[in-house]
Length: 315
Image 1 (cartoon, rainbow, N blue to C red):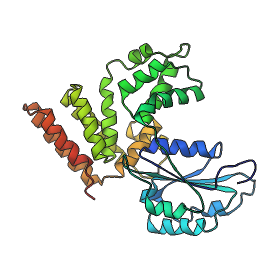
Image 2 (cartoon, one colour; image 1 turned 120 degrees about the horizontal axis):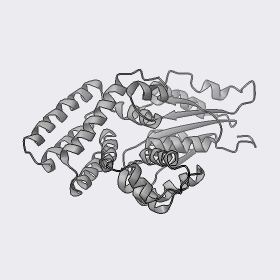
Image 3 (cartoon, rainbow, N blue to C red; image 1 turned 120 degrees about the vertical axis):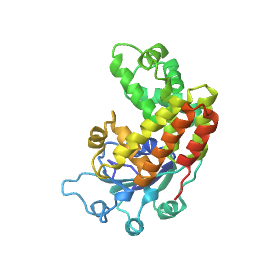
């Protein structure tokens, strides 16, 4: 890159959270606005703009998300570009893997020798520090006990935690946010910890789903409340799946009845892991699980079976 933009020309980011990957990519690019492409929607010619200098001298960048879904033609095009990448342009590839997964070998081979490969992750024990650091960068006054309360109340989803911190800032503009503010703002929403289960479940992370469900059941969360949260997420995914793939996240959020753009991005990523027929089939399984629970069956028996049927990748 030029002196004004020392960013590496090619970077592969990998990790188990799509929100963190995209956030890291945008931070890496600084103020440069990239052309953003979902790998599954690759049409061909996406690297042309990187190889063609801008008439007005703007910095060029291409951000490719969900790179494990790259079609063969896209891989060939990227390989051709990476044979001689433009040092004045930035190419960032994001690859989401399962929890405890490793960097995709094919992508690593593509980038090795011409670019950097970086893992993007926030460990459970580091979530509070992560919240505090993001709050500081955004000018949000938040105390450590509030960060701890957010994790305890909302679970481990970085996207949900980030959105909650911004919501608190809007609600308490004059205050330094404490745990009391968190409890007041999200009172009665402890069931939102089911969000974490749903993220793992519809991310087809079976080990993480089993651990998350076990934690909820050990905490004596009502099995019907857990099932209700899963059913609500499934309904959101069905709405997202029925909409065109290429509409912008803000428009997708409005059309699907979602509150945040990050939800639209995450739910679109999750919906891609299932065919419409699979999602409709899961709806039938949830209806059956609801019938069993209301007939007196134990949640410790019904829910693990449901979790396994959702999170196991049949493809």
